[in-house]
Length: 327
Length: 249
Figure 1 (tube, chains in turn blue, red):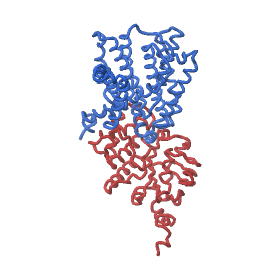
Figure 2 (cartoon, rainbow over the protein chains, first blue to last red; figure 1 turned 30 degrees about the vertical axis):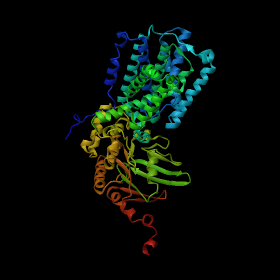
Figure 3 (cartoon, rainbow over the protein chains, first blue to last red; figure 1 turned 90 degrees about the vertical axis):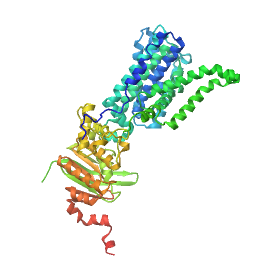
Figure 4 (cartoon, rainbow over the protein chains, first blue to last red; figure 1 turned 30 degrees about the horizontal axis):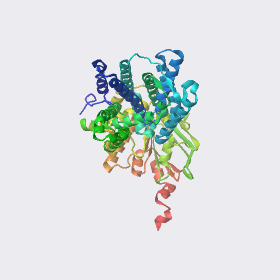
């Protein structure tokens, strides 16, 4: 008979070491003298990873946000306005994250009783309301013209490391949460909300907690991203930013730690690959230039559909199913 | 023999739309008692259990547990107070292992703090108590069969250290042998001193286990007493078998 000690008791949480190791290998890249464009592209990829991870944490608790850009934007605008008005560097990041977390509580409060589509629509509506506010309050937000955000760091290499640190930080925080008691509560609520309630889990409390943490991280990332881009306008609340983490997580694997990394890397690889082959494509037929900018969304769309059909849970769970022993 | 009162249901009524599922039901459960709730399909047995564990809110009436009014509390609150149970349709967290399922009960179902690792050890103990097979401890709940799932569910409920265990048709969907073993486990639970309120439609199960039986029909309590008394009760026979005049024909 097996004893407790040789029963393999571990949580079904993806190992964090692999993602962190992977990101650690990115450490020396700027030192190799790649073009700053390449470093820029990688920085944006890190942004995608950390931002998607924050969305994914919310998804892990069974809640889908279709307006996560709202939190990104609140973080970005808060730090932009604060830094412009007070000239105090760095503090804006924290304020942005906190403002976003606060918004997360508010949205969460309206959403905890809603499910699936309704929840998704409320979050989407929230981000649309913010666009309207941002445009109207132009004495504060610069209206449609947006704001030039003061830079925090001297070069793109510095931002590269900043974004990398932020990504590792987010992933690590999320990992700690998922392997804790709170993570089990999130999973239980996602799996079966009624049963979770009957087993003593305060569903409202944990759903709100998930919203708050997710919004905090998204706000922090959004704030740093605003400084990195040196500019912010109402597009940050747009559908592009709201759907980015959804597409990335669906491709990589919803509710997994490594999912956003796989998803972001794949999307980035495809988009860079298309950019690289553009000259050849044009050589074959110059008319291609007329449609070339439509090819990327087309390819992304095809990949998204293919992943959903072939690996409905995403690439990461699909890989794990084939690489790891069955339970 | 008067034992201290654990649960007291007073004049509880619940209707769904125009359908009255439970009508003005009163009953009491004393400590360390096994009470059976029987009645034909649609009599309101499961509804009554779901009102007690706060899945449903009653329209009128109060429910007292250990002298406290729980009529306004939520499921998770009454679970932490000591009311926990299994549902008629075996439910679980499908993408979690048996151990994880039960450890949720240990972690959240009772007051006090436990670490995740301790909870898992406790979960293994409880799973062993309900005679869950050793080599399926790490199996995901969605890959378990119904008998195994019922045990996980029972273990999950027991893991919260309930004072009152609500069992809703534990033998449903089980084969004869599995059913017998389930009854053995209920006997074992009783030896631990846990009070049980169970819904069951197999009279044999009720007869062998319960101290007291409450019979519901069309949402109303029609009889209450020892299994023997109830089995000989006119009204009960009528509700189960139809009018006696029909039988004589």
